[in-house]
Image (cartoon, rainbow, N blue to C red):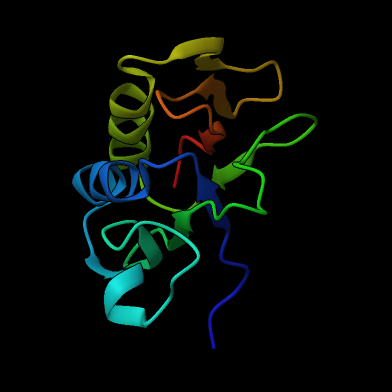
Length: 133
């Protein structure tokens, strides 16, 4: 059993978002649409469930008629120390493309590096590493 896996509800672009995260993090992506899942509470081609498995795990779906799409306030998805410095720096740079820097990836007074951003899908990320890792 793995740790916490965020499950994000997207406003109709779950397939696009989850494919983007696969291009950033690698891993295996499974997508199941409403029609295949036998659901009738949304368009047949909408994503009923998607799962990215790999170095970063994310699950998600297109928000249903009675669901709210993800809105992130007061939180980040943290990738602190989850990979080597080069990998984390690359993830930061790729995620911020078409997004927005909140706080640039930089060395902090205590010696670690971290930065925060909002990606193109409105997801807030905290990425950082200890330089010796």
